[in-house]
Image (cartoon, rainbow, N blue to C red; front, side):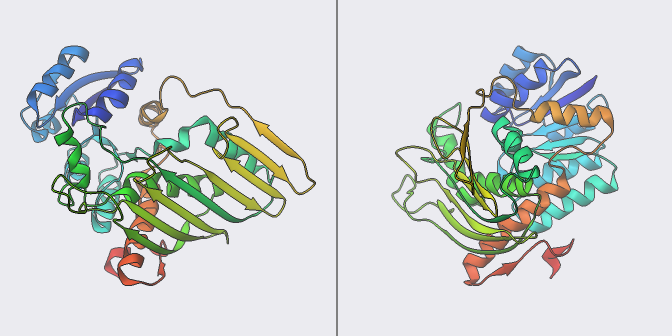
Amino acid sequence: MVNIGIIGCGKIAQVRHLPEYAANPRVKLTGYYDVNEARAREVAAKYGGTIYDSYFDLLKDPEIDAVSICVENRAHAEIATAALYAGKHVLCEKPMAVTLAECESMVAAAEHNHRRLMVDHNLRFDPVYRRAKAMLDQGLIGDVITFRTVIGNAGPEGRSLDSHQEDTWYFDKNKAAMGALSDLGIHKIDTLQYLTGQTVIEATAKVMTLNKKDDSGRPIGVDDNALCILRMSGGAMGTMIASWTIYAHHSNSTCFYGTKGNLLLYHDDMYPIILRQTDGSSTSYTIPPEEGPSGVIDEFVDALESGREPEVSGQEALSVMRAIFACIQSSDEGRTVDVNHSYISHLQ
């Protein structure tokens, strides 16, 4: 039995972490902390467990084995590092932190304290991506030469369980630090690395605010669009677009172009996977809609009980964050940026 503490009891905790922990027979929901005490009380009343006056008090409880960190971006590193040094395993929402130094410090803290650190890159658990991974590994399209991927929606407005006012932290640079690139693009970089088995080693990007306005009518403090050219360690190269301004219909398309064919994911509304090969054949696949848990919580718990590294370990998530920060640096400096060539890259 793994005793879990929840730090941050907002929407992501309530729609994913809490119900999935509650459904796992190997888990006991033990403690909660939220800056909104009433929200923590509501959660505790529903799932049972203790409310704490601060996250420090929660981390001091020896009964708690691991924590889920579901707070605003800027607080991730501080709380995760404190938890790891308190001897807790950590499942952290993405992005893992808002600076490269913080991300690397989190990984170092996990290694130093012999604790597990996992970041919630949930898309790789999607059955469509699992099937696509197997197809790519089988070599059905040969070697991937190029790719293009787009992920976008109308933005984070309306995500909160509370008032619209609470949604605005996504647009506040002091709280979120980053925008559409880290909110959406991060998923695509993780799945690109997962699917190809390659790592981003070079980024050329424009990360911009094109359309979103704050309540006063000024451009928001973070990016609402990112257009990135990514070169991978195995030779593949392609484009990634992340956007909060796709207002009419969300987009989640990924296309791989290989030496023996093409693999199109979420490119067609009816068929989430389409395989086109050089002999002229085309096969469309229907995948049963995803039901039940996301797979993230169950993977985290299984890794803790098995004493192994979880999928999307801190080290693996770090490679994604390095690519994110390389895209931002590329945009800021107007040049191509190398990435993922050394362990402590923020000191270079």
